[in-house]
Image (cartoon, rainbow, N blue to C red; front, side, top):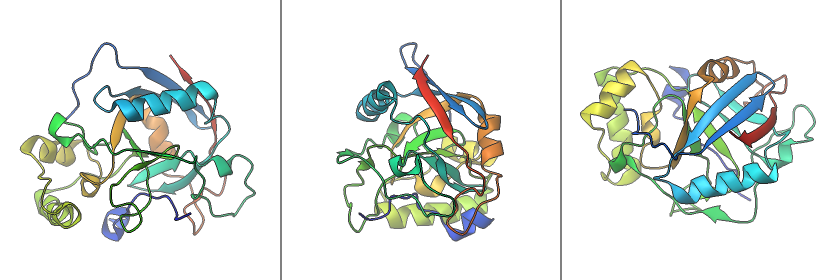
Length: 226
């Protein structure tokens, strides 16, 4: 299987809020670093329902955040990470199905800091940009100025054929809250952190090996519906 990943621009790795609904489901993710509370968007029902199915099955219990890149994101959900020995590269585990892309930028859903999104295989083997069944990431990103956002727009144009434009609202969010704009239009965002963003911050600062795997395991202890 091709490695499931989130595209990290070297320059980014180094270097508006969605309208809520009363009925949006909420899950609590207990980790070895603290609790992260997430709401799932009704605008992305396939991803919402798939994630809740996995939560109800206990599929995420005891898995690792196996890929962590400072100022970018934390990634978890590889089923092979449950009992993986130290130093092993992870990221290829998944279930035997994909979730069709639900990219909803036109509904104000994009890669601001704190959003939950689905990892996937690369465009060369996955041109439809369908999502991994299990692997997800939580965005941290960075804060951008207008010059860098113009560079990100050029990258987005390249990745989407000019179909995605950063709105003024999005640009303002990236200049104040932060995020990973170069992923807009290429990956499905399907939820966001509503409590515990400081836990995400602490995880994205842990020391990692050459595979971006934390040297000391950061484990998802359980995920449950609230």
